[in-house]
Length: 66
Image (cartoon, rainbow, N blue to C red; front, top):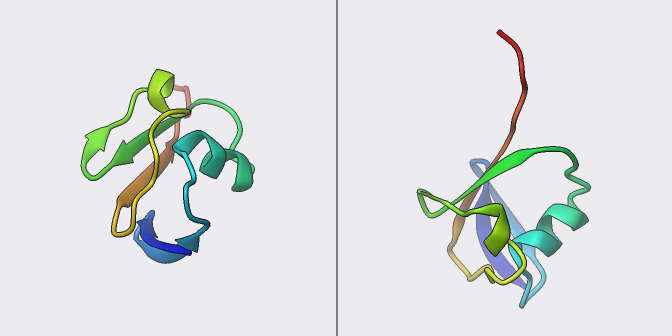
């Protein structure tokens, strides 16, 4: 297992998991922004960006409105 910080909470995820797989396992749907170690990770890279031990990930749901 790999230990990460996810939205401010310590969490263990399986080894060799990509951001895309993590979002799927968390059942995250709709438009989201993902920050990996204080840098935005573009959606086009979610499938190839592997999570490593100690990574800090923030997942923000995008909500429209005004």
